[in-house]
Image (cartoon, rainbow, N blue to C red; front, side, top):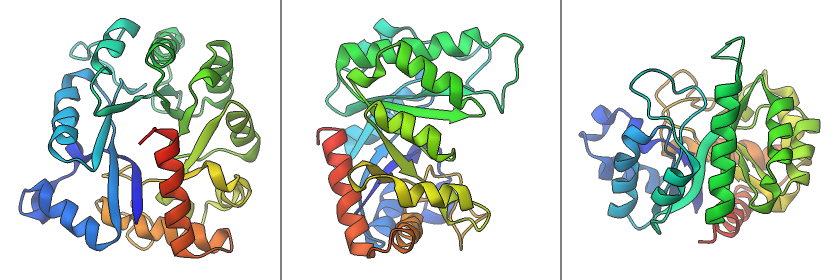
Length: 259
């Protein structure tokens, strides 16, 4: 069976699933997906992801504020608040957090870096792994992880799309590397090379649904049932079998998140 190690079940349009999450999950079950990590991107919707995790025993969740979440309505997190919300046994990770200089190009990114540091501090207090988002900010991301001692808790570089050097730096800090549907894209040659190099005991797979549907569903609404396409591509790249990729990534997920 497969584990969708990063999805946003609360954000998926359920119109194709009779407006019921249970129907979506049944569809995913038929495609071999049995466990999920529903990832929080802002505190305003933490209750939504937490309630999903409390309702379904095979779904866990995280708590965090995405680096691109901005605006007067966004509640800025502090470490103490993240620690308090992470006390639930359904919360197994801190994040999604990190840096994104692609979508946001402020002259002063201190606010984003400070938010990132607060998440790392909360992870160290709770001893729960981090879920890291990085885009056009790989050097600062690694630098802050090093400065804040993120190797004390580890975590996952989610939806990884960087080069091998960045992957190696993250691996050296004890992080896992998670591959999304991007790895199935024909243009993703550099990422495919990374997928071949990451040690077997550090790979995860994810959908990041409802975004980034894999080939051959690219451009469509993504959902967990499409995880199998990423697993099949990983098997091809690593000269392995679909069954082995499923077993390896499930074991890695359970080890990282102490499930």
